[in-house]
Each structure stands twice: as C-alpha cells, then as structure tokens.
Amino acid sequence: MELYKENQLKIYNSLSKTKEAFKPVHDGHIGMYVCGPTVYSNAHLGNVRTFMFFDVAFRYFLHLGYKVRYVRNITDAGHLENDADEGEDRIAKRARLEEIEPMEVVQRYTVDFHDVLKKYNFLPPSIEPTATGHIVEQIEMIKEIIEKGLGYEINGSVYFDVVAYNKNNHYGILSGRKIEDAIHNTRTLDGQSDKKNPQDFALWKKAGEQHIMRWPSPWSDGFPGWHLECSVMSSKYLGSQFDIHGGGMDLKFPHHECEIAQSRTCSGHDPVNYWMHTNMLLLNGQKMAKSTGNFILPDEILTGDNKVLSKAFSASVVRFFNMQANYRSILDFSSDALEASEKGYLKLMEAISSLANLSTQNSSSINISEWKQRCYAAMNDDFNTPVLISHLFEGVKFINQIKEDKASITAEDLVIFAATMNAFVFDVLGLLNDVKEQSSDKIDGVVALLIKLRKEARENKEWDLSDQIRDELLALGIQLKDGREGTTYSMS
Ligand code: AMP
Ligand code: ZN
Image (cartoon, rainbow, N blue to C red):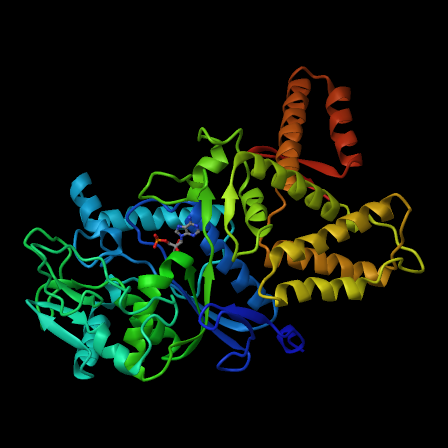
C-alpha cells in the first residue's frame, strides 16, 4: 500500500491562514507549481532556501508514493525593475549593460542556476517552462481577459482592471491588502499614467524604441506583464485548478495576488487549493536580496570565498542548516550558525555510517515503530523538518547507546530503523554523506601512493616489497589489477 494512504498530511495554506488536511484534486496525484528564478543574475542563497524547501516537499511527496507533476518556471522576460509596471526589463537591462543579447543573459544564468541546483543535490522538476516559450498562450489569455471585460487597452498596452474585478471578487484575498492600498508601482509622468486606476497591473506592455525584447501582438510590438506567465503555464500544465502553488513570501503581493485575479477571470474559480509561502533568509538582519547587495552566493559557501565566512562548507551542511528551521520562520544566516549545523550534520552522518555494523539482540530497548511514526508525524505536520531532525537525533543517541552496550535492538527492528533513518536523511531531506565521500577520496589517495611505491619497488627489482604491498592490500580487501594503462584497484 502506498504510504500516502496511511499518512494524513496537513499543509499551512496561506490563503486560509490555517493548517488544512491535504486532499489532492486527483487521488494519488499532486500538481505543484513553484515560481522559478528570474534569470538576470546568479541565484543567491536566499533563493536557494525557497527552492530547497520545495525540493524537500517534492521529495516527501515522492517518498509517500504520490505521482507528482512539479512545474517550476524560468522567468526570462517581462519582470521589470522593482516589480513595477514601468521601467526596464531586468534581463534587457543586463544585456544592455554587458553589450550582449538578452538570450545570452538568459542562457548564462539558467546554466548557473542548474549548476547550483546540481551541487546542492536538488531533484529536477518535471517541467521547467519559460515565459518566452509561451508568448502565444499569454496573448490568448489576455484576449480572454479583455473578452470577459476585465482587460483594457490604452496606447498599445493592456491592463487588468482591478477595480472592476474587485466588484465581484476579492482582490487582496491572499496578501490581506485592501484595494485602496494595493497600488501598483508605476512611474508617473506629471501625475499622468495610462492606467485607469493605480491598482491596475500590466498584462501587455508596448515596447519603447529601445526595448530589445519584443513580440508582435494584436495591441503592439511589446512584451507580457510578469504575472501573466505563471497563470498561463500553471493552467497549461496542471489544469485550471491544481493542488499546490509555492514561492517566497515576498511574491504574495503583487505577483500571486495578480495570478489569482487573472486565473479566476478566465476559469471562474480559484486556481490553487493550497498556497504555500516560505519565509526569508536574512543576512546581517536584513532580507538577503540581489538589489541591496546583501547576499551570499551558493558557490561562495563551497569555496569559503566571502568575508562573512570563517571557512568553506559543504552543500549538505547548508541543506541541514536550512532544514533545522521551519520554512515559515525567518532564518538568520551566519558563519557561526553554519559551523553549529556542521557539527550536528557530522554527528548524524557518523551515526548513520555505523548502522550497518550494529550488533543485534533478542529484544529492543526502544519502540522503533513508535519512533518511526513520530518521524512521519513531524513531516505530516506541514513539513516540520526541525522536529523531524530532533527525532533523527534521538535515533543518533540510540545508535550510540547500542554501540556502548547501553541499549539493544533486534535484527528485525534494525532493518526498520536503518531504512527509516536512510529514507528521511537521504531521500527526503536530500542530504549526502560528505564524510563517506571525503574518506573515499582519502582512500583513493592512499592507494594511489601505495601503487606508486610498488611500481618503484618493481623497477628496483625489490620483489619482496612489491609483493608485500599487493598481499597486504588484498588482506584489507583492496585488490590491485595490473593492466596496459597501469595499475587500478577494486574494493571488496
Ligand atoms: P526571484 O528570482 O527574485 O524571482 O526569486 C526566486 C525565489 O526566491 C522567489 O520565490 C523569492 O520569493 C525567493 N527569495 C528571494 N529572496 C529570498 C530570501 N532572502 N529568502 C528566501 N527566499 C527568497
Ligand atoms: Zn510566478
């Protein structure tokens, strides 16, 4: 039986502001959409926090046996500076400053994003659509919104009429903003804006002469508004009503509020059943953000090359650090905090590595199935990873007690215990055992040295020494193989 049938998940829904029992639209299937990066610069560690949380949620769904379609887009057009309706496209600006094509900017930072995700052991989403790959669908959605009477064209640009929408709907339902306060950032010239109401937002913008990213449309040569792509791509790949939509808290307004308005206008119902928002990663007490320069890059963590770091840390330590906090709490980044996480992480890895060698007895001194249930209960409670980690550390304590003969476990329980520890640590939290990798690197180095010494011994016709190296390595389970390319080894 699939695990999801015996695990009732509860998800904190940002829309209802309560934890709700999770029930997918289609039994056994989950559709999840997460707003992806705007690829005009390198992703910073704050972005990684948000994407990493959804990676763990995705991993847990898979672990529970759900069939998941996880869509995470790439924003490669339409996201203007300051999330505003006027001003320069972030990607076009970067292209202009660097004197390269916008698509070169997109390519460079998409590759960098994927590179970071790989180093940090992310699972790839099921679909990764781009805004520029869905211009036709975006134009179609604008036509539909105009037909429904909630979009209007002025001077080649099309806006969403928030005030008209709000007569029969609740604009501000997600962010809690009142319509009077939900004013979209628009640069006005002499108090003049071409929008009817300051709350309205752009669906299509006419491109100025200088604007290099432009597509033909019934209204003008221009480009889509930033919010449109996510309504279009989520409904295209997940249907007009799907299970989960995620992103960072800062996307609630205006981005997700506008998505709801667009999608409701076209389908007549709410697009998303569970809205999930992650809280911010802070650096020096402030939100980590590209625009303020207050950020650290994921690669800098791995090299230690940033003045806020005392040393380099592995990607798994960063993962562990992130998972020690609840995703709905703010998290303060510091080198000291990472060092503390590293200690905990190493303790966990050391205990896990010794699981296979634990000796078993006729009885268990802890109730393994009750402990296992508590691990699941923590994740079922809105993905409470810090509580899960506290249970995993109970497991660590138990392992150490068994090693010291202060506790006992049966062979049957050990199988369940090891499988549960491994599943949560590696499959669900997505940690890697760096310790094992580091020690196998060390073994590689030591054996290479012995192979070199043996080769020198043979060249000097010191046969006893060369045989001794080969035989003693073999006794340790390391077999040398002489071939045309040189000597290699295998371990039993
Ligand atoms: P962007 O590329 O700016 O659209 O951001 C990509 C994702 O990272 C969005 O879901 C943001 O909400 C999220 N994000 C941005 N800054 C932070 C931060 N300091 N902490 C956590 N998430 C963030
Ligand atoms: Zn989005």
